[in-house]
Image 1 (cartoon, helix red, strand yellow):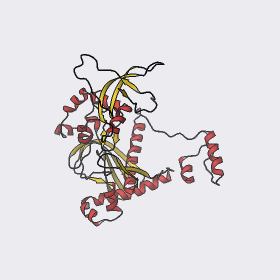
Image 2 (cartoon, helix red, strand yellow):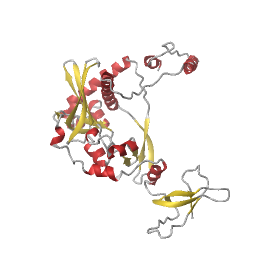
Image 3 (cartoon, helix red, strand yellow):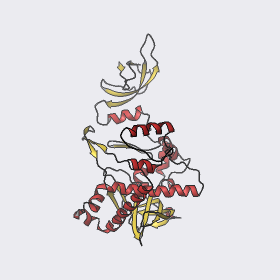
Length: 366
Protein backbone atom coordinates (compact mmCIF):
# COMPACT_ATOMS: atom_id res chain seq x y z
CA UNK A 1 0.00 0.00 0.00
CA UNK A 2 1.15 3.53 -0.69
CA UNK A 3 0.15 7.16 -0.12
CA UNK A 4 0.05 9.96 -2.72
CA UNK A 5 1.23 13.22 -1.17
CA UNK A 6 -1.23 16.14 -1.26
CA UNK A 7 1.75 18.43 -1.82
CA UNK A 8 2.46 18.16 -5.56
CA UNK A 9 6.13 19.01 -4.99
CA UNK A 10 6.53 15.55 -3.49
CA UNK A 11 6.57 13.54 -6.69
CA UNK A 12 7.16 10.05 -5.28
CA UNK A 13 4.51 7.81 -3.77
CA UNK A 14 5.17 6.93 -0.13
CA UNK A 15 5.07 3.30 0.90
CA UNK A 16 3.16 2.54 4.09
CA UNK A 17 5.09 0.59 6.68
CA UNK A 18 3.21 -2.32 8.28
CA UNK A 19 1.75 -1.74 11.73
CA UNK A 20 4.20 -2.27 14.56
CA UNK A 21 3.94 -5.60 16.31
CA UNK A 22 2.23 -5.41 19.66
CA UNK A 23 0.38 -2.19 18.84
CA UNK A 24 -2.87 -2.07 20.83
CA UNK A 25 -4.89 -0.37 18.12
CA UNK A 26 -3.53 -0.36 14.58
CA UNK A 27 -4.84 2.39 12.31
CA UNK A 28 -6.50 1.21 9.13
CA UNK A 29 -7.01 3.31 6.02
CA UNK A 30 -8.95 2.57 2.87
CA UNK A 31 -8.32 3.66 -0.69
CA UNK A 32 -9.52 7.22 -1.29
CA UNK A 33 -9.12 8.36 2.31
CA UNK A 34 -7.04 11.31 3.48
CA UNK A 35 -4.38 10.35 6.01
CA UNK A 36 -1.48 11.84 7.95
CA UNK A 37 1.80 9.98 7.84
CA UNK A 38 5.22 10.36 9.42
CA UNK A 39 8.23 9.71 7.20
CA UNK A 40 10.42 7.05 8.76
CA UNK A 41 12.70 6.48 5.77
CA UNK A 42 13.79 9.03 3.18
CA UNK A 43 13.83 8.13 -0.53
CA UNK A 44 17.05 6.83 -2.02
CA UNK A 45 18.38 5.91 -5.45
CA UNK A 46 17.08 2.40 -5.01
CA UNK A 47 13.99 2.82 -2.88
CA UNK A 48 10.84 4.82 -2.28
CA UNK A 49 10.20 6.82 0.88
CA UNK A 50 8.48 4.91 3.67
CA UNK A 51 5.96 6.38 6.09
CA UNK A 52 4.07 5.37 9.22
CA UNK A 53 0.32 5.97 9.45
CA UNK A 54 -0.41 8.58 12.12
CA UNK A 55 -4.01 9.66 11.54
CA UNK A 56 -6.96 8.78 9.29
CA UNK A 57 -8.93 11.94 8.50
CA UNK A 58 -11.75 10.39 6.48
CA UNK A 59 -12.82 10.18 2.85
CA UNK A 60 -11.12 12.71 0.60
CA UNK A 61 -14.47 13.95 -0.75
CA UNK A 62 -16.06 14.45 2.69
CA UNK A 63 -17.45 17.96 3.36
CA UNK A 64 -14.87 20.05 5.20
CA UNK A 65 -11.98 17.73 4.36
CA UNK A 66 -10.10 20.58 2.64
CA UNK A 67 -10.13 22.41 5.99
CA UNK A 68 -8.77 19.38 7.85
CA UNK A 69 -6.00 19.10 5.26
CA UNK A 70 -5.21 22.84 5.38
CA UNK A 71 -4.90 22.77 9.18
CA UNK A 72 -2.26 20.08 9.04
CA UNK A 73 -0.56 21.28 5.86
CA UNK A 74 0.06 24.74 7.33
CA UNK A 75 0.69 23.40 10.85
CA UNK A 76 -2.09 25.48 12.39
CA UNK A 77 -2.69 24.67 16.07
CA UNK A 78 -6.32 23.51 16.16
CA UNK A 79 -6.45 21.89 19.61
CA UNK A 80 -5.86 23.69 22.89
CA UNK A 81 -3.43 22.28 25.40
CA UNK A 82 -4.88 20.45 28.44
CA UNK A 83 -3.36 23.15 30.67
CA UNK A 84 -5.10 25.95 28.72
CA UNK A 85 -8.41 24.10 28.83
CA UNK A 86 -8.02 23.58 32.58
CA UNK A 87 -7.37 27.30 33.01
CA UNK A 88 -10.46 28.07 30.91
CA UNK A 89 -12.61 25.77 33.02
CA UNK A 90 -11.85 27.87 36.10
CA UNK A 91 -13.23 31.03 34.49
CA UNK A 92 -16.76 32.18 35.38
CA UNK A 93 -19.70 31.88 33.00
CA UNK A 94 -20.58 35.57 33.29
CA UNK A 95 -19.32 38.86 34.72
CA UNK A 96 -19.21 38.69 38.53
CA UNK A 97 -19.73 41.53 40.98
CA UNK A 98 -16.08 41.24 42.00
CA UNK A 99 -15.08 41.97 38.39
CA UNK A 100 -16.63 45.44 38.66
CA UNK A 101 -13.89 46.67 41.00
CA UNK A 102 -12.07 49.67 39.53
CA UNK A 103 -14.38 49.87 36.51
CA UNK A 104 -16.84 52.51 35.40
CA UNK A 105 -20.46 51.54 34.87
CA UNK A 106 -21.46 51.98 31.22
CA UNK A 107 -24.33 49.48 31.28
CA UNK A 108 -26.84 52.30 30.82
CA UNK A 109 -25.07 53.66 27.75
CA UNK A 110 -26.68 52.27 24.55
CA UNK A 111 -23.50 50.85 23.05
CA UNK A 112 -24.04 48.64 19.98
CA UNK A 113 -21.91 46.33 17.86
CA UNK A 114 -21.97 46.72 14.07
CA UNK A 115 -20.49 43.81 12.11
CA UNK A 116 -21.06 41.63 9.07
CA UNK A 117 -23.98 39.23 8.89
CA UNK A 118 -21.73 36.20 9.31
CA UNK A 119 -19.65 37.57 12.22
CA UNK A 120 -19.25 35.00 14.98
CA UNK A 121 -17.72 37.17 17.67
CA UNK A 122 -17.93 40.85 18.51
CA UNK A 123 -14.78 42.67 19.58
CA UNK A 124 -15.86 46.31 19.60
CA UNK A 125 -18.91 48.44 20.32
CA UNK A 126 -19.63 52.11 19.60
CA UNK A 127 -21.79 54.94 20.88
CA UNK A 128 -22.09 58.57 19.81
CA UNK A 129 -24.03 61.61 21.00
CA UNK A 130 -24.02 65.31 20.20
CA UNK A 131 -22.28 67.52 22.74
CA UNK A 132 -23.04 71.12 21.89
CA UNK A 133 -21.54 71.67 18.45
CA UNK A 134 -19.30 68.63 18.84
CA UNK A 135 -19.58 64.93 19.63
CA UNK A 136 -18.86 62.38 22.30
CA UNK A 137 -17.61 59.13 20.75
CA UNK A 138 -17.20 56.01 22.87
CA UNK A 139 -15.38 52.98 21.49
CA UNK A 140 -15.36 49.91 23.74
CA UNK A 141 -13.09 46.91 23.16
CA UNK A 142 -13.51 43.56 24.90
CA UNK A 143 -11.09 43.36 27.85
CA UNK A 144 -9.34 40.06 27.15
CA UNK A 145 -6.48 40.83 29.55
CA UNK A 146 -8.81 40.45 32.53
CA UNK A 147 -9.16 36.74 31.79
CA UNK A 148 -5.88 35.92 30.03
CA UNK A 149 -2.98 36.64 32.35
CA UNK A 150 0.50 37.26 30.95
CA UNK A 151 2.63 34.12 31.06
CA UNK A 152 -0.33 31.83 31.77
CA UNK A 153 -1.28 28.71 29.84
CA UNK A 154 -4.00 30.49 27.88
CA UNK A 155 -1.52 33.22 27.01
CA UNK A 156 0.94 30.58 25.80
CA UNK A 157 -1.60 28.93 23.51
CA UNK A 158 -2.74 32.31 22.16
CA UNK A 159 0.89 33.30 21.53
CA UNK A 160 1.47 30.11 19.54
CA UNK A 161 -1.59 30.81 17.38
CA UNK A 162 -1.07 34.53 16.93
CA UNK A 163 -4.56 35.10 15.55
CA UNK A 164 -7.86 33.41 14.81
CA UNK A 165 -8.17 31.66 11.44
CA UNK A 166 -11.49 31.80 9.60
CA UNK A 167 -12.54 29.02 7.25
CA UNK A 168 -15.95 28.61 5.61
CA UNK A 169 -18.29 27.32 8.34
CA UNK A 170 -15.42 26.88 10.80
CA UNK A 171 -13.20 29.07 12.95
CA UNK A 172 -9.92 28.16 14.61
CA UNK A 173 -10.03 30.71 17.44
CA UNK A 174 -7.03 32.19 19.19
CA UNK A 175 -8.76 31.54 22.51
CA UNK A 176 -11.18 28.79 23.61
CA UNK A 177 -14.82 29.31 22.68
CA UNK A 178 -15.79 30.17 26.26
CA UNK A 179 -13.69 33.31 25.80
CA UNK A 180 -13.78 34.03 22.05
CA UNK A 181 -17.56 33.63 21.71
CA UNK A 182 -18.46 34.20 25.34
CA UNK A 183 -16.73 36.30 27.98
CA UNK A 184 -14.60 38.24 25.47
CA UNK A 185 -17.32 38.75 22.88
CA UNK A 186 -19.54 41.81 23.29
CA UNK A 187 -22.74 39.82 22.82
CA UNK A 188 -26.06 41.66 23.06
CA UNK A 189 -28.05 41.93 26.27
CA UNK A 190 -25.28 40.71 28.59
CA UNK A 191 -22.71 42.48 30.76
CA UNK A 192 -19.16 42.42 29.45
CA UNK A 193 -15.83 43.79 30.67
CA UNK A 194 -14.23 46.26 28.29
CA UNK A 195 -11.55 48.89 27.80
CA UNK A 196 -12.95 52.22 26.66
CA UNK A 197 -11.65 55.09 24.58
CA UNK A 198 -13.94 58.02 25.43
CA UNK A 199 -13.39 60.89 22.99
CA UNK A 200 -14.56 64.47 22.70
CA UNK A 201 -14.50 65.58 19.07
CA UNK A 202 -15.17 69.05 17.67
CA UNK A 203 -17.88 69.65 15.10
CA UNK A 204 -15.12 69.95 12.50
CA UNK A 205 -13.91 66.42 13.23
CA UNK A 206 -10.82 67.52 15.17
CA UNK A 207 -10.01 65.54 18.32
CA UNK A 208 -10.22 67.71 21.45
CA UNK A 209 -9.48 65.27 24.25
CA UNK A 210 -9.75 61.59 25.12
CA UNK A 211 -9.70 59.28 28.11
CA UNK A 212 -9.01 55.55 28.50
CA UNK A 213 -10.59 53.54 31.30
CA UNK A 214 -11.80 50.02 32.16
CA UNK A 215 -15.57 49.60 32.31
CA UNK A 216 -18.51 47.23 32.36
CA UNK A 217 -20.81 47.56 29.35
CA UNK A 218 -24.11 46.11 28.17
CA UNK A 219 -24.53 45.86 24.41
CA UNK A 220 -28.00 47.09 23.53
CA UNK A 221 -28.04 45.49 20.07
CA UNK A 222 -26.08 43.35 17.63
CA UNK A 223 -26.44 45.25 14.37
CA UNK A 224 -25.21 44.46 10.86
CA UNK A 225 -23.78 46.83 8.27
CA UNK A 226 -26.79 46.11 6.08
CA UNK A 227 -29.22 46.98 8.91
CA UNK A 228 -27.50 50.27 9.67
CA UNK A 229 -27.34 51.19 5.98
CA UNK A 230 -31.04 50.38 5.58
CA UNK A 231 -31.94 52.60 8.54
CA UNK A 232 -29.63 55.55 7.82
CA UNK A 233 -29.30 55.70 4.05
CA UNK A 234 -32.19 53.77 2.54
CA UNK A 235 -34.64 55.14 5.15
CA UNK A 236 -36.33 51.74 5.39
CA UNK A 237 -39.42 52.40 7.59
CA UNK A 238 -39.53 48.89 9.03
CA UNK A 239 -35.86 48.90 10.08
CA UNK A 240 -36.11 52.48 11.40
CA UNK A 241 -39.13 51.52 13.52
CA UNK A 242 -37.28 48.52 14.96
CA UNK A 243 -34.19 50.60 15.75
CA UNK A 244 -36.13 53.69 16.89
CA UNK A 245 -34.53 53.95 20.38
CA UNK A 246 -31.05 53.76 18.82
CA UNK A 247 -31.63 56.00 15.80
CA UNK A 248 -30.49 59.30 17.41
CA UNK A 249 -27.15 57.71 18.33
CA UNK A 250 -26.74 56.07 14.91
CA UNK A 251 -27.51 59.36 13.17
CA UNK A 252 -24.96 61.12 15.38
CA UNK A 253 -22.44 58.41 14.44
CA UNK A 254 -23.12 59.01 10.76
CA UNK A 255 -22.73 62.77 11.10
CA UNK A 256 -19.47 62.32 13.00
CA UNK A 257 -18.22 59.86 10.38
CA UNK A 258 -18.74 62.49 7.67
CA UNK A 259 -16.71 65.04 9.64
CA UNK A 260 -13.93 62.59 10.51
CA UNK A 261 -13.66 61.53 6.86
CA UNK A 262 -13.35 65.18 5.77
CA UNK A 263 -10.66 65.79 8.37
CA UNK A 264 -8.76 62.72 7.19
CA UNK A 265 -8.89 63.89 3.58
CA UNK A 266 -7.42 67.24 4.70
CA UNK A 267 -4.52 65.34 6.28
CA UNK A 268 -3.87 63.69 2.93
CA UNK A 269 -5.04 60.17 3.75
CA UNK A 270 -5.10 57.75 0.83
CA UNK A 271 -8.39 55.90 0.49
CA UNK A 272 -8.03 52.52 -1.21
CA UNK A 273 -11.49 51.57 -2.44
CA UNK A 274 -11.46 48.05 -3.83
CA UNK A 275 -14.27 45.61 -4.54
CA UNK A 276 -13.91 42.53 -2.38
CA UNK A 277 -15.40 39.15 -3.23
CA UNK A 278 -17.03 36.53 -1.07
CA UNK A 279 -17.61 32.85 -1.64
CA UNK A 280 -21.05 31.35 -1.17
CA UNK A 281 -21.01 27.71 -0.08
CA UNK A 282 -23.68 25.03 -0.39
CA UNK A 283 -24.88 22.71 2.37
CA UNK A 284 -21.95 20.38 1.68
CA UNK A 285 -19.33 23.08 2.15
CA UNK A 286 -18.54 23.34 -1.56
CA UNK A 287 -18.26 26.65 -3.44
CA UNK A 288 -21.60 27.47 -5.04
CA UNK A 289 -20.67 30.88 -6.44
CA UNK A 290 -18.34 33.84 -6.02
CA UNK A 291 -19.90 37.28 -5.89
CA UNK A 292 -18.72 40.86 -5.26
CA UNK A 293 -19.10 42.13 -1.73
CA UNK A 294 -20.11 45.76 -1.81
CA UNK A 295 -19.06 48.01 1.06
CA UNK A 296 -21.48 50.66 2.22
CA UNK A 297 -21.11 53.76 4.39
CA UNK A 298 -21.87 51.72 7.52
CA UNK A 299 -18.53 49.92 6.97
CA UNK A 300 -16.74 53.25 6.61
CA UNK A 301 -18.53 54.63 9.67
CA UNK A 302 -17.07 51.89 11.87
CA UNK A 303 -13.65 52.24 10.22
CA UNK A 304 -13.53 55.94 11.12
CA UNK A 305 -14.49 55.20 14.73
CA UNK A 306 -11.72 52.60 15.02
CA UNK A 307 -9.18 54.92 13.38
CA UNK A 308 -10.06 57.66 15.86
CA UNK A 309 -9.54 55.27 18.78
CA UNK A 310 -6.26 54.03 17.30
CA UNK A 311 -4.95 57.58 16.96
CA UNK A 312 -5.77 58.19 20.63
CA UNK A 313 -4.02 54.96 21.63
CA UNK A 314 -0.91 55.94 19.65
CA UNK A 315 -0.83 59.39 21.25
CA UNK A 316 -1.35 57.91 24.71
CA UNK A 317 1.57 55.49 24.25
CA UNK A 318 3.81 58.26 22.92
CA UNK A 319 2.94 60.72 25.69
CA UNK A 320 3.41 58.11 28.41
CA UNK A 321 6.71 57.03 26.80
CA UNK A 322 5.58 53.42 26.88
CA UNK A 323 7.57 51.05 24.62
CA UNK A 324 5.34 50.00 21.75
CA UNK A 325 5.27 49.02 18.09
CA UNK A 326 3.98 51.39 15.43
CA UNK A 327 3.02 50.37 11.94
CA UNK A 328 4.94 52.80 9.74
CA UNK A 329 4.73 52.79 5.94
CA UNK A 330 8.02 54.03 4.56
CA UNK A 331 8.10 56.01 1.35
CA UNK A 332 9.63 54.67 -1.87
CA UNK A 333 13.38 54.78 -2.45
CA UNK A 334 14.73 57.62 -4.65
CA UNK A 335 15.23 55.12 -7.50
CA UNK A 336 11.64 53.91 -7.37
CA UNK A 337 10.41 57.49 -7.12
CA UNK A 338 12.25 58.37 -10.35
CA UNK A 339 10.74 55.34 -12.10
CA UNK A 340 7.26 56.27 -10.87
CA UNK A 341 7.58 59.85 -12.12
CA UNK A 342 8.88 58.65 -15.49
CA UNK A 343 5.95 56.26 -15.79
CA UNK A 344 3.41 58.91 -14.79
CA UNK A 345 4.97 61.37 -17.22
CA UNK A 346 4.12 59.12 -20.18
CA UNK A 347 0.45 59.66 -19.31
CA UNK A 348 0.80 63.37 -18.63
CA UNK A 349 0.57 63.07 -14.83
CA UNK A 350 2.82 64.67 -12.25
CA UNK A 351 3.56 63.80 -8.63
CA UNK A 352 4.25 66.79 -6.40
CA UNK A 353 6.24 66.92 -3.19
CA UNK A 354 9.77 67.11 -4.57
CA UNK A 355 12.22 64.51 -3.25
CA UNK A 356 9.99 63.53 -0.32
CA UNK A 357 6.34 63.48 -1.41
CA UNK A 358 3.83 63.11 1.42
CA UNK A 359 0.65 61.06 1.55
CA UNK A 360 -1.26 64.20 0.56
CA UNK A 361 0.70 64.38 -2.72
CA UNK A 362 -0.17 60.78 -3.59
CA UNK A 363 -3.81 61.35 -2.62
CA UNK A 364 -3.97 64.42 -4.87
CA UNK A 365 -2.56 62.39 -7.76
CA UNK A 366 -5.15 59.65 -7.26
